Image (cartoon, rainbow, N blue to C red; front, side, top):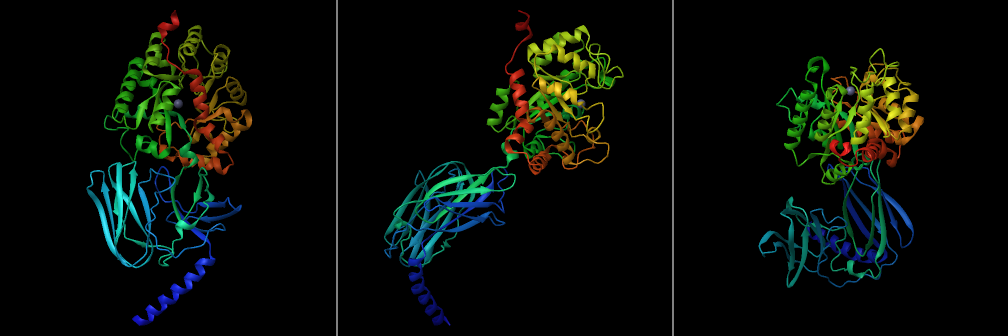
Length: 561
Ligand SMILES: [Zn+2]
């Protein structure tokens, strides 16, 4: 039996030496992962264009995220039987990936020794194995800190050393075992014999992901590892309204830095949800704090500050649009203060200025309660009474300071009065379209048009009773409201204001907490929204208005001059 196997292998050797000369192909393979989660991505379509002859073909990743393709090459020179040393390929095109595939050809039987050294010449890792002639590869899954490393391969009297740069610290498993390559013909130098590099373009396609294109010039079998990113993750998500401060001001054990399975908001779940910027509402319950609204608001501001201080790696306060961008560029969530309900200023412009100095960048003119100077949407006088003279002064002061005016909860006549005074875009942070559901918290078409005419927008709320009269509501109903506003006034005038932790347990199916935001983007994609449109809905429109109104810091003192 042993003799028989030996006979077969010799036949195979002779046969493959003939077929190789006829089959001019390069083997390319790779792996695709999600840029954010790192998970292996299956069913990614790869379009592989051979630019040297104009052919395009496709393949798919398997369940482990791996793909392979044999590229027919017409410009290959003759193959050579000459023995070669080693061919080492750094991963391409992503040098940040701490995994390196080392291809090598073994010309004659013998021990092959692979050793990894650091810059001090200390051996970091190593392995050896007796190998028969053929093509092999071995993987180095980096471990250790970032820096320069050296790889040495030795067999017989041949030795090869190559520098490897590890840009990120790795926690990998080090050197793998030797893998037998796709072609085990001994002594054939296929890699060095391509006289002209083959120009190849590899392009990915997967639903909800941004296409990724690699342009490369191949001179041998090649391995590609890269990550692709969802449209959701790539977009800046700017949620207009969140009420977690109201909940945690009475619960000192709940910290935003920790993951929770209750409530709807914390930083770990914001990260999963892809939230880049968040307005945190300071809302003072007028029924329990009607006499100390301002002080209670400031205690919520203190809690906001202390929560941010507990996790400065992941979140920071933004007071301007530039600060949002700066934080996001450091992979941190931008947290912005907002005040929901004009009763918090206690009819005092100095208190308004104090809240501004604390970072308030929008003021919801009223909550469900009217103030002395502005009537709420819930008030029976909504259509007849609006701003008082002091209310007009408040609006002018907000404009001057650069505080965005939010008219969710605000009475119909009050909104009309605001529109006659303000010179800034105004917004509704967490409402819906009244044409789809006739609720006092939603906006009539003429109100939506008026808001759009200022350059502002409506942030669609995720609260079922505002979205529908049908009880249970899923994410598609949220998009119904978005669709309605887009059709009425265009893509530049809609946004999202979840109202998480201000809506009890009555949540939209698919948007149960802040980690579920990606479901909204999937529904938008299903409805046919483009990446550019989705970026506007998720945050681009908010950034535009934030930049315009609150672009830079001001002080009340400077305004009085
Ligand atoms: Zn509200």
